Image 1 (cartoon, rainbow, N blue to C red):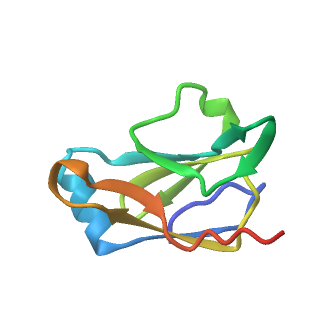
Image 2: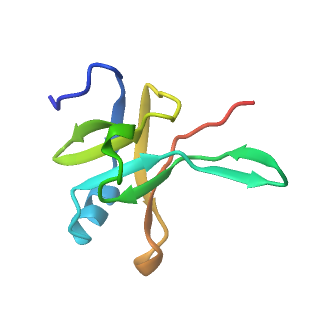
Length: 105
C-alpha cells in the first residue's frame, strides 16, 4: 500500500489512459491545484487543474504516492474522499483532468 500523509485521508485513482500519457511524456509526478476564475468581480469555482511535474511551493501541497506516481494535492482545495485523474483531448491537445469533481451550490 502506498504511503499517505497523516493529515489527509484520500483515495486518488489514476486511469490507465492517464498513466500511459504520463509515461509518454516521461513524467512520474503531477499536481492538482486550485483554479479561481474571476468573472465580472465574482469568483467562480471550477474543477482543479492537473499539471505534469512538481509544484513550485511543495509546502502548499499534500503528497501522495499512487502506483509509482507522485501526486501533489493543493492544501487549499476541498478534501475529497476519492477523486479520479484521467485525460481529455487527443494527440498534441491531450491533457490531464479530474473527472469526478462535482460542484454543489
